[in-house]
Length: 224
Image (tube, rainbow, N blue to C red; front, side, top):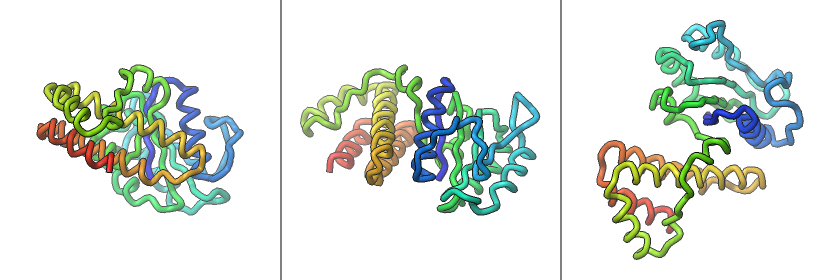
């Protein structure tokens, strides 16, 4: 599994890391996430402060070839992943896609738009608190009855930007719910599936699909 933590605030990114590590290692993490010494955490390092190149990625991939030393899962970490060159991102694709049950990757970025769509499609995105705060208040039309929801959808779908904003806010809402459920140690498969459906709906809208039909279909899928 590959996770992408999106945010600008270091404290909130640490919080996101801690939640993920607690889940992946199935124990409470008390150490400072960014300074902890653990043989099962591998951080991609680069001598170039402006970019991360393909040679850096190759060295990182070598470190990730082994099995965990003491934890249940070894973690590959790429801070500021927006600095990855396009060539470096492409060289990562197979690595991210073929991660095993004992290997996970955590990337961080302040701007997900600088990552290739092929990389983003392999990541489960986790938005930090600072990212959520800049969003409009989530209007959960998916809790309305069918007639009310379709009436609201008819208005929202007239504008592409409004449609995408609704889907982004829905994804953020589900992400927040997921983090809460992970912390409680309950099954989160349905939330994962729902997030996937929202992501697919966004792709259809971005490809100029019929916005009203996309939202109506998503409503029916999520409320079954």
